[in-house]
Length: 255
Image (cartoon, rainbow, N blue to C red; front, side, top):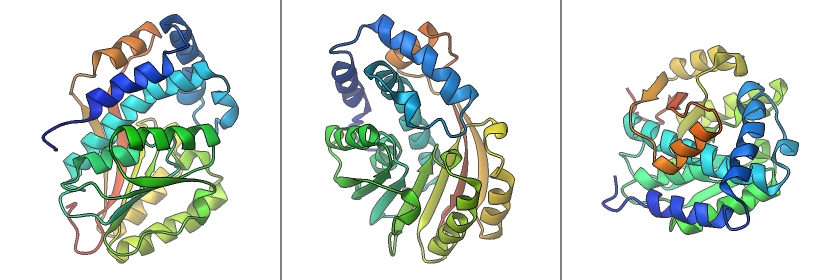
């Protein structure tokens, strides 16, 4: 971990950014409306779920913060940042928190490249990386067409794969396996609930066949009070939990 953790200052800036024109009650109400789509009906929620400032603010302040913390903990537990990284490709990067979290635990933060379909999320990712002092670029486009990094890079798909059609998953899996054989680290992060990821078992077998691993995580670390308070106010049970698939790339650092 870096000596100075930028998460707290970023979270404060995020609150100031999204609460400038919204009350806490408005954000709480938006989070309640969003949670049924995002959690209970996670598969292909699409851009319509994020119409309006309230839902976008709720997503950033609650799910964005949780995703940052979860990916940071998973990367640290896997040792996925122990060896130097030349770059991180964050596919379906959303608001940019996943790639930022991986970069945050690296000894020397690598440049980031994000690919995101939704314009508002791509813009938020640019702001996130700038606020955290990270370097990179965010491209609004189709993650299925993104070129993978060469050499000692990494590919992250955090809370992304459920948004794809089933026909897109098989060729993407083949590309990820091929990239790992070329020394690229690959990390997939998804919620614990298996019902939203019918493809999980197949991908687990493919990752394990390549010396990869599958894990379920429940981290006991206390959540920052602003995040926990917002979740409780919306009737949610904020916890730092999820599942991951990891390919260490090359000679490996994940076994």
